[in-house]
Image (cartoon, rainbow, N blue to C red; front, top):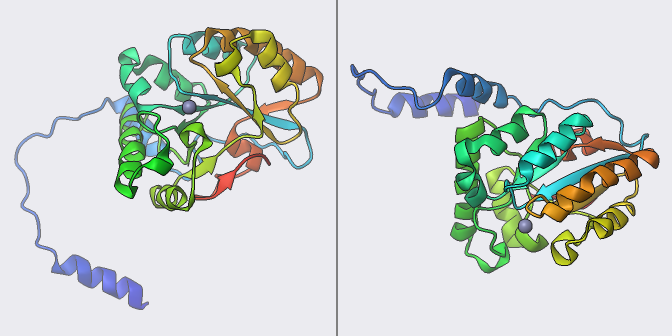
Length: 252
Ligand SMILES: [Zn+2]
């Protein structure tokens, strides 16, 4: 037990802090605090059990929000009891009035991931810059929702060994995709549906909830993939566990 002894010795060496008499005002509501405590558990959001090695699963992912159309998307997903994964931008979370959509993403059982603060190519930043982009978003999402994010998506899918090292340090897996709908480029619902329909068992589909044309396409995307026998899962559910920090995933 040499490690334990070392830690105990380390604690004993610290000066004992004086007790503060002043009343500490809580920074968050009791509800948020409760959620935060729950979120400290290893598996958040609570995963449903799907064996995606045996059934046809697909993970729909939405980047760059929350934005003005995220509410409509959440309504659609809720109505169909579909869970997705949202890779949010810190700047968009900060601009989300009352954090309404950010909270709904979490409350309605979707998975939330880190897409940086301001969408730079992380490969062009210093390690401190990468840490800042991820850390600021992490801090804000955690403060608003109580959730400690376990995955990130590098903007533009741009990553390298240095970015991977930082994500490992931050405890985040890197989630890429194997189906790119190019929704940001063409802005046509039918093209989103056509691209999403190419998903295979275990695919991760890339979309952006900041485009109304993408949200418009979602009912047909769900219809088309349902008809092909797909079950819609979050990224963690796709793998049956929390993806490993620093590792890169493109599909199951
Ligand atoms: Zn993006």
